[in-house]
Image (cartoon, rainbow, N blue to C red; front, side, top):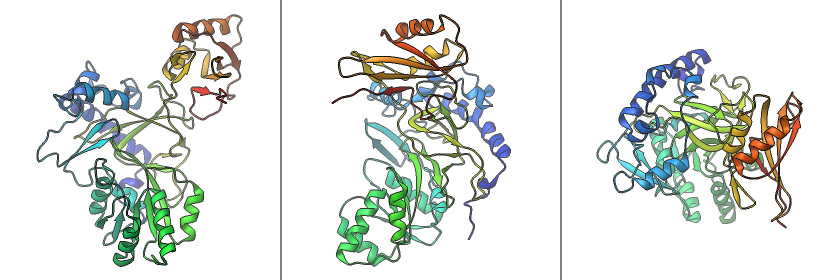
Length: 415
């Protein structure tokens, strides 16, 4: 059996990048023509010129809250806020809802959410039965996994969520090759099976998502004969990255263009620095261009030891939205980034909010090589102009600030 899902996984990085950049201007043009929302968001953009990551980085980032706002504003006319290129009917067999409420269309393409690649990397193969414990109602998770399993050539038991004893009974009687769902629910099922005295020897692998999957839980599964792997996907984008047998980060999917940007901005960060994941999908039905996931991650150096050549990321490292209320005023990461941008001497910036409740103090820490007299005061003045709040400036050498993606650190005591 092949180690790889297809030949795309072992392309040279240059070949992959050339293919993605060739597809990018076509997708931008398609989004402008087929998606009323992107016709507005990308108005005036020459799609034919968007042929590089540098050109892509000039386009605006659309974040989830903006998608929600557009959907809510246009609900009476268009449930999708103008983002879907499809209309109700045979080309859109299903619609899903995520918290917000945000509505997502599902098209008819085989493996619409591109999950088969992650399942293959987790060890699933054609002809196997998969016990799918992701929800089948409202959210797309259940359908994401089922359509991926069908594309891989597997049969699916639609277990869904809850009813733990019935889940154990179905696993014992149907003998699936593995489980797909959240890691916490798999632990509940295995604990219940042990309590009931029901062995589940057929369940030897699992693809989990939707929650953190710490090494301690992975090892707990392994002790019970289950090899667990994780993937990173969203309801808007489908599969973004997946774990391999190397267990060294997550490999990006082959049909997405991923950038990591400084939170609150659309500016790509250097490789290895933690930032927000921004994804451009090549899905023509729901053509999201520079969609900000709100999740933090970082690029890992080098290729995957399994031979897959695509970029690897560290996985989910927290949320990028660090908006904080200081002295009754909201301070946004974008405001901190805007202050830093005004001064080319500033390499990185981090706003630390400290003190006790009702006695907030702000210190903007900036990495810089320059210590010219008056620079700190100029930065402090700019900070006050941007946030309408006073704050001190602390100048530190390059490499001093933590690489954790935080632009605003809330270090206050709430006791």
